[in-house]
Length: 315
Ligand SMILES: [Zn+2]
Image (cartoon, rainbow, N blue to C red; front, side):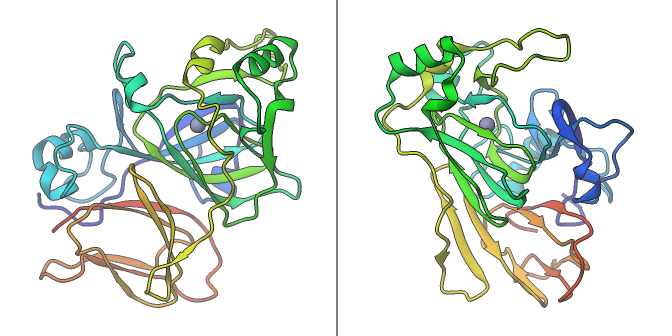
């Protein structure tokens, strides 16, 4: 693969009634007209949703093509995958999302067509003073109680919630009910899946004046009623002063790097997804062995945009 690493892709927009324009005003994306831009899919290989390389010799090639043609170079230890296993997106939650849940791998594999399960994690980039994250069930809430509350329109009484700080990271394992509240802007990493079961929509109506469809039975079937409600993770020290570990689960690992000067990144035989905020001054490949590339961020630089990259396991 002859490419300018790391790889950068054109974003794919998702417009939903809970979106807004902060992907542009806060994250520096250039949006077409409209006030309902909810999601920017930055890195995706799922069905017909395909990231395309933005520039360089591979311009226009899809992520699926790159996985098929040079999967071991791209994914390293994960090269047995036939598709890119993770999906990275930004979300602008102008109005809170529906309450939803995603299945695990075993359940999703039995769907038609089969899908992956979806464990996801959020990194909060912006929160209004009273923005809330809804995640998990209150202790003791069981299937009959939740089912009855959904039917009576007050499922919110079953939920745990909290006000997240900017910089909070929350892991949402498959089977956990969740919703993002008004005012949040987050980066989300998740398994590459698009299976969502909506169990409660806060008694709202859709654009057509009617309630949006719910998937109550499917939701009740996949919810883990014994799981503890998620809270923001406690960052762990890694032995490298500028790197903190936020999440280590069986689907992905998330580290937060706080850098003020050039730092080597990569070169460890693993594929890395990189979310830069503020944007890098310069990102360049290094082809003569050693670290794969560096990110340079000037101190005190005002955040103007957010960029995502895929850094292959080896160059
Ligand atoms: Zn979700």
